[in-house]
Amino acid sequence: VYHALQKTRPQQKVVFFHPDYLIELGRFWHRRGQRARRLSTGLMLASTALEICEQVHLYGFWPFPLDLSHNPLPHHYYDNVGPSRRMHAMPEEFLLLLQLHSQGALQLHVGPCTL
Image 1: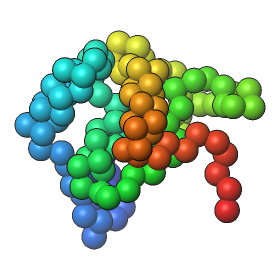
Image 2: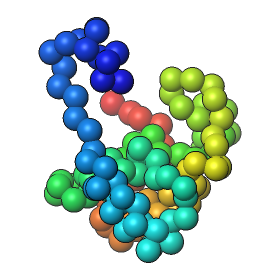
Image 3: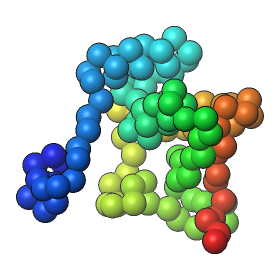
């Protein structure tokens, strides 16, 4: 990503997670029942937001192939590649986010976006 942005948007600041932070974040969630080989980028960013923000609103977290109206959904917004259960545990992460929503730690928005 860094090299692609350097070519197209050289003024764009790019930041990365420190590897030690990612290791400790993985351990933190593993101790709380998350058994995925690797946390999703979404859960990493949501976790960071919970650390630094007073309010966290999450959109787009939906691990299922159909939306609430039974319309098909792609796994990623940028391609049609399906999920890999070997890497991430999306349904389990979603349940975790739902628990955090129920506890008031964050707001999980799952319906269609409205203006």
